Length: 495
Ligand code: AHR
Image 1 (tube, rainbow, N blue to C red):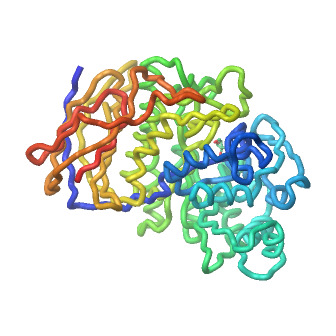
Image 2 (image 1 turned 135 degrees about the horizontal axis):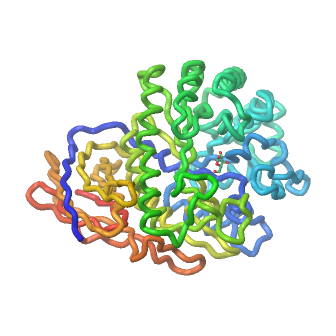
Image 3 (image 1 turned 180 degrees about the vertical axis):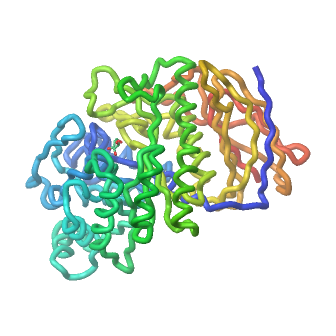
């Protein structure tokens, strides 16, 4: 059927800037995320530049990835940076204890990561080992990467092939320190954070945003304790929130072949992101009313049961239309909180959790999630605009979700962009948005949808879930009038 809804755009009341870092990625040494996904080695038959696969770099350039977080995740708190520099044939092999006990060859280390980020055109975000290391190791790694001088660590970097310092604009001090990053209490972590930050030396011409390890989901006590003890010494604090269809880590739910009820449950859970961010923001306001400290949602996305027959520690899952719509629904939430949320990193870029790209040998698939990122590129470094919507609701099995959510912004190019995530499984929505003072003449757009809720793009064949031109919008009498299809992502451009 057709539902109806109205909204109002206030283009004359610009809000917070939408930092391009909101469209960031997380790439951990986990499963086939780095090895196979990014690194194939210089001798591979798969086309590569200095060992880094060309197809993946090209695809990521197209979605203008602004920042990549590496090397973990849980992996980061066991990682020793020295294992990953110097001649590759001399690097030690380690066990990846967090992720299936798989061998870690260290063929991909600091220089290879920086090369990957540079090829993609993204800024590097490096996560430091706090849980099983000390401030000296952190200080020396930062010096190795960023020192412009003649000191021994800078000379070592040059001997390893990099003359100029690497730019490292974002550095995380610990990851999930309440869990895999050291099982710390917030009080203990606060002290550790203060100790590490005392030995964190900035280069004036290569400064880094210092990111404190933040809370799990709705644990606002963590944010409260750490902000109180250390807000002055940090530039951002992180937040991790994953979407499980069932909410149960023992049986999370399947990535494909799911029911309409699973769809509704998944969206009901992912939309909790809005309140989770609002609650942490309110705590941060107590200690940082000027909003100097950013809230970095540097791990988020869907987490399903792994695909049958794959290593449970490798977190390999398929990606469907549900994931694409869910990504857009979260982008809209992040835009609403752009005054605090200035970076996010979806978990994870390739072959792990809610991936942009899946690979099989030399073949790849660009997932529905990838295309949601592509459609939202104009929101990078835009200015958010208020868009008041009253969306109809859809209820099933005791769960209620809105038929859609939305956000608006003025792009760098001066055009107005409206992003819509239609979560309605069956019904389209006839939507009329009053444009207020905005004198727009034309509207164009793109839509991402498919016949099935779990439509996916096969690996090694042209995609079936790809954006196409959207023709069901027009401007008449100061209103934007459109028919929003069920289960879709729509991005409109108003000129
Ligand atoms: O993204 C997978 C894992 O999820 C990360 O390593 C960890 O930080 C989180 O628990």
